[in-house]
Image (cartoon, rainbow, N blue to C red; front, side, top):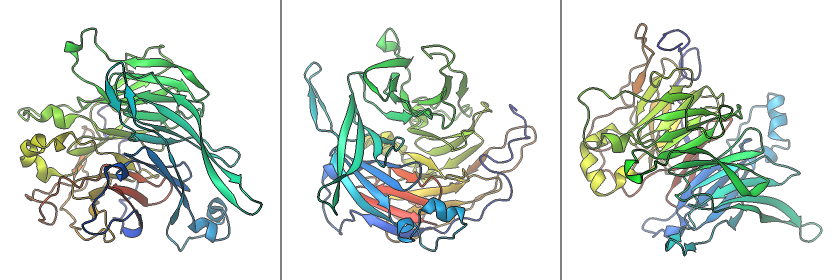
Length: 453
């Protein structure tokens, strides 16, 4: 299929292009009033829906994990899955309520290295539920914890939720952990830092297996680091990891114990004459996500979102420009360190759309089915369409025998999409798409905003 036009009709779906979604505000948790100062510890640093979409977890810089649960399905008097089976159309949009919170991590001090270890939650991953209890993994820079949250009877009619740490996976990373990812086998997970990826069994916290090690013998020879890693959603032997050089490697755990040789390498060739001082910095991939079907990988670098077909390593099948108007400002962004901001990305459950954040608490939603021109800019506020400007876009077009590449979303104004001055201090780094519905959860500082379409 390499380089061939056929079979690539649509990155994640086929058929006619879907109409752009009309996003509406649903809920906000932790909304701040104008001028209210935000405490550093309250800033949200991780967001994750569980597999059903009935629960949502956030982590913050203060080491806390907050859980929310869906209420609208329960209020309809039947379980949502049963309603879906009956083809029951829900008139209400998804609604969540605060469920519980617990202190996951505390600040620590590494006496050997004389380093403070922040309590900030870097990632949260839900595990399989069992006997009505919820299970999840949370990590800071050094330590991963496995939590069980379950209802305990206090008095006969009343129950309270109790979060208990079941296991602590520590002392396995010399560098900061940037990713954790559950395996589809339900038994193992990976953790990744700048130079290594370790494989753990959920039941065993005393040992892990190092499966990727990119550390050179001489650290002066170091040219790239691991930035993100994720297991394939259904193939328990396959995982992908991204690098600071803009490449994604697919590895097969069946090939050898130490997977230093990748089975596939995905990278985009640099356009001749386009190199600058910032080329390598902005090429660094900050996040990767597999589509639910496992066929595509979405990656986010500083300026773009790219969609890759795992059967085609000649280049991305689609590329979306997130904030092209910042290109003339790269020097300023470098000076104030914003160029190193790590934006996350997500895909809709059906793989038809992708989303990622930007500055001024804006986020973008792009359609990635063939012919789609959807490139929406939304603001994390109660009026998400306030800054809405549909940028002129052109649909994907066939290039003969070359793979189709879709490049959209650019607008070349000096400010943001509406000509407003840009605010680099308000950035939307973390967002998550509901697994089965068009519903998005976004973190704007200490506030959690939810939208539906």
